[in-house]
Figure 1 (tube, helix red, strand yellow):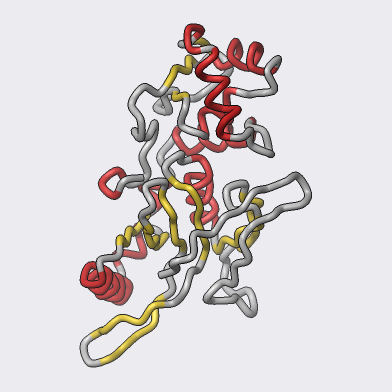
Figure 2: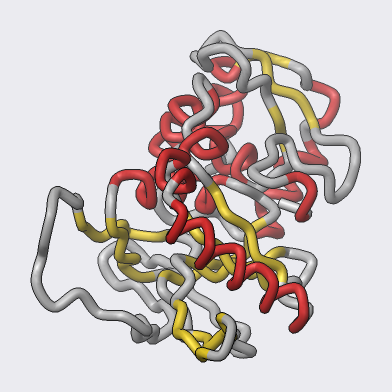
Length: 240
């Protein structure tokens, strides 16, 4: 588990992200896995993904206000399996705004029906509990909740590519508190005159809207009133 509080910011075409070397490099493509890179705003660099399910998970990580940063394929750990010591590389390492580190395995739910896969992940989970490390398995059931995922993708792509500063976001909310609730369309109109957009405020967790139905310009958004309370949860029992 990494102890480095990495940082990054995406400055248009000149990202200034952390220098991260994946623990496991893919030498040659195999099978039907779609591999690619995602221009992460939170990390200020391109993030690798192996498979479309990991890409969908990345959208959740990018849009959750409770996740500060994340890394793909962090350092490999060694865990006991009977008399043997085996190696395991998590898919992601999350750094939450609380300061907690969470290791993530992204796995299709059907794969968990395989006895070997289930045995391996059970042993990994046991090792993590003994070492006091938070370990979460995210399946397609948790990741691909609709219309939540499609809504978050849309919000993410509407937001400014270079996010406003935290001070600018807070000032925009405090100076216009009396105007909420209102539609995204109306919020976009008046915030644009202040160099701000409602989508960036949603991603920052300062505003919220319902994700249980398709989001549009007519969707009502409102202020988040409970500090630290996520407007959507990926794994609520683990704080994000």
